[in-house]
Image (cartoon, rainbow, N blue to C red; front, side):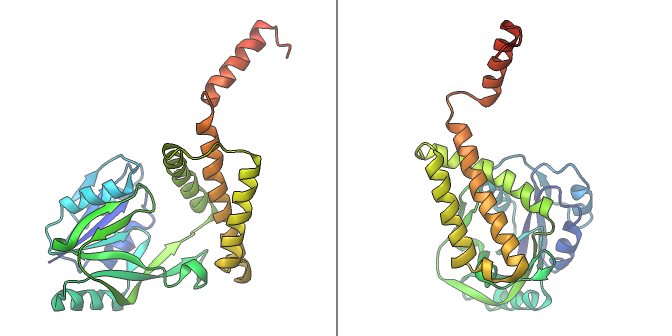
Length: 267
């Protein structure tokens, strides 16, 4: 028996095709993280197992979803991923063969409307298919990964991943993830941010994205993606700087306003 787990949040434009692609599963479980659009209405057309949660820890959400599964095997699929016809066939064959492995699945990434296979976009392995008895836990609040027992196998076929659908989607994702990343770095007692640290981070990330991952040599889309990844990393550290201040900026501005009032608006 195969259970599919899908995590959602405001995915009304994507969730239908995702659910259609996993309709072969014996059980579909949707864990929604605070959608305000029609995501839940659409999900309920495909499964009765729709749960609500509102936490920022993605590993916790995946672990909670695992507790609701009834299948011997569990497949994790994101709302912007689709199980290709060939992958579906392979997954069913792997389950029937049952050699006890946990499986990583590659992703064919569609970036800004076209397939990209440079640097981080291929083969882009993600560990998603696990036999229940081998499952240990998902770990990490963001960029979470699966801990398991036994051997890791690799599928021959791939997810289809509809990522970087427009600029707004990429920026909004960066805004959300940078909040979590910044808090984790603060919790780990990251050194105080300063001008030279920002410059070092910018240069290092530009080198990683543009040269090591070959984004600057992969056409217009490669350059655009690299620049947005650099922006995302720098944004995390700007948020970290903000968190490292002695008081919230909202309080600072309240005090500025009060001084202006007290001084009859003379600086």
